[in-house]
Image 1: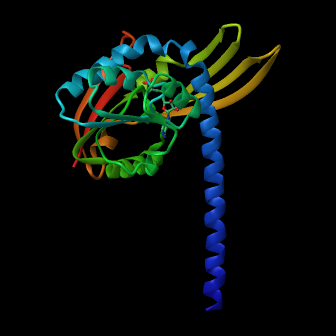
Image 2: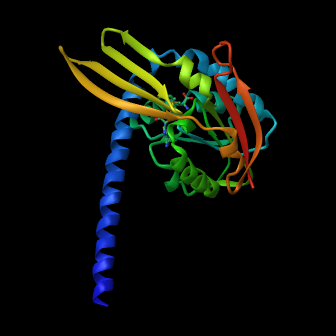
Image 3: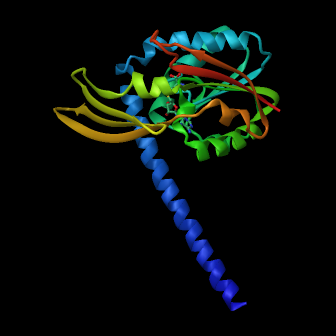
Length: 259
Ligand SMILES: C[S@@+](CC[C@H](N)C(=O)[O-])C[C@H]1O[C@@H](n2cnc3c(N)ncnc32)[C@H](O)[C@@H]1O
């Protein structure tokens, strides 16, 4: 009996310290996402986003839906275009970055800064545009799909794009520096063994001084075999695309059905 009590106390202690470190890690990750949010407009992604969204619009044309949840909605451009095309549908976005959510809300987009596991409503379709799924490693992605299965109605779909190995290893590696007077950003990016690693350093002008922030964002390579064997999901289509007109395809769009 005594032994059991000691054991259970230890377990409680271990559980709470693990959760503490998980929370700390999440906070550091979210701060890095906020740095990304503050400089996304300098990276050129807004120039190619409409081309990517046009694939989603094309896919959605063939699907019947009343409600759609956009996960990692960012500054809300995809949802805003979607609302113009589908004004009567229930459209909602979530993002881990509060900075992104505020920018989406400022455009009139229904976006909130909550985690997927706190969503109680169910949706016909979920989307995750511009490589949000690459931000999750394999273990996180397994949890993500388990949670998403509770949020998407059976017969519904999850449509997302990920960076291909060519996209991660060739297109965005190296150094990037940009300065618009109010912001100076330096990014160093590497790719090794399926992990794309970006170090961000941002100097933001505050009155006559500059505030420095640093952050790290990792993206993880995932392949078709992973998405093909997920419980509760059926891979319907994988569509390799070239967003940047380079020699190889840089992204893949996936359509998974909730079964
Ligand atoms: C490259 S941006 C794409 C934003 C937007 N979907 C677009 O098309 O412009 C990736 C977004 O995913 C968000 N994000 C990353 N991991 C997330 C997670 N686990 N849950 C919710 N949002 C996440 C980031 O904060 C960021 O806004």
